[in-house]
Length: 399
Image 1 (cartoon, rainbow, N blue to C red):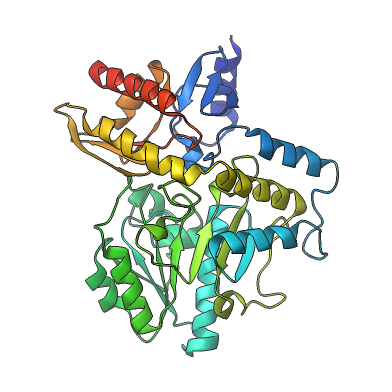
Image 2: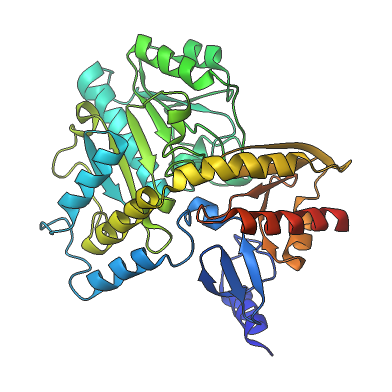
């Protein structure tokens, strides 16, 4: 039995079945490519859901990790470390925010933001204890914790994990009027994705986010944007909100914050909100550890030094034009912004298409049975992108 088949067999025997991966076993990655156990090379067009914006094993981030491994990896927040302060300064400077709270996973960042919004609601707005409400959008994906799946509209994420945590109002995504109508005296925040990635790269109409920002400002309600997937260059700007100039009061970040080397996330925002946390009200054993800070700091430097948001903007226009030129009766729509693109089919054949892509040397992910997302590392070149597109075109013909 070869190494790849053995790995799959052991995973199926001892692991839980909460994923249904394509039958490929990856063993190595570099830049935009990964290799399987048999040595076959593939384009990675998923980038670990945008965690690999800087590409696999970026040398500058790997070097930063190796240097820190020989010094100090963990001390807990019971003590200061020499990497946390400089990282927080860099993150706040890049985001234009006043404070940052580092965590580990994207879901932890969103949970932290929810706590911050509720704390603001009780301490500053005067909402009666236990009655704070947060407005969210249908089709959202903010993570897998019980609170986050409780206000998901995806049955696969939500069913079987109730009772749902109270305190959330759901409105249609992209409907600013419905959102405005949902704001009330007990609203402590609005939590939204500027583009819904897991929903299949759902892109709202231009002007929606600006209208949301205006409604929140008039109602004096904080706006929190979940940029775990869309942030850090993916959509052609450092942050997706920049496309409409709607700076949020809070923002969650993760995934590419570490360049794919180590779990790092953060909530950044106004002092008036994050400054309400006091010792004992929130924490994390690993959040803000020196290894995480060294890795994340290097990951941010790569985004800026290599102008990856600008590259995503330029190549995103080119790639979307190429995808839009595909002519196939089973394609319903092609959409995207920057290097966050999707092809939606008229029927549930997305997983089948991903298997054809794999055979052609391209790895991509289906979602909701009808949509395939394409989100390559932002370090991809135009020549590489064209080669990947040709494989996508050929795989479409295979259907």
